[in-house]
Length: 159
Image 1 (tube, rainbow, N blue to C red):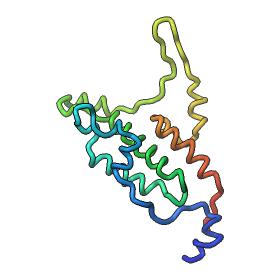
Image 2 (image 1 turned 45 degrees about the vertical axis):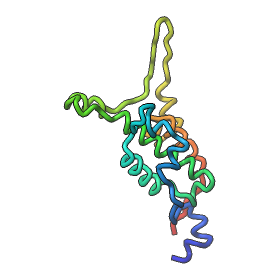
Image 3 (image 1 turned 60 degrees about the horizontal axis):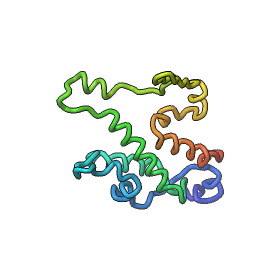
Image 4 (image 1 turned 30 degrees about the horizontal axis):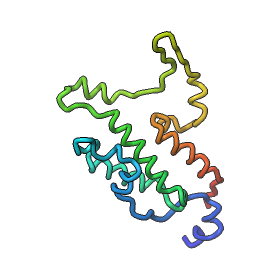
């Protein structure tokens, strides 16, 4: 479809093409906390990190994000690795431990410690990134969603 490379393609705000290579080492250089711990044990298996790199490569396109592509890749991967860590359980914990690790976690609406209490208006939180609720479960996802809203602000035209 040669017309997608011309003015119609530019106006569509759709991304095509492939990304440059992005390796585990590229990710861990920016986010070493997902690499090895103080005892040189992997915090997350490399197969899991690679799985999320592959997913990010499919979802985050260089020709859409331009110079922010590497940052977006990092946020995307870090978001899903954080969720992965939240859902892991000790293999010896039995079914109850696995179930507990896999439970959905939401946002706290009020927290108190000692004589101090803080409440959050949940309605305001859900409106600031409408449609991006799952991305709000980590700081990395919130950063990605905030920038994605700006980068994807242009209209789309499908021909």
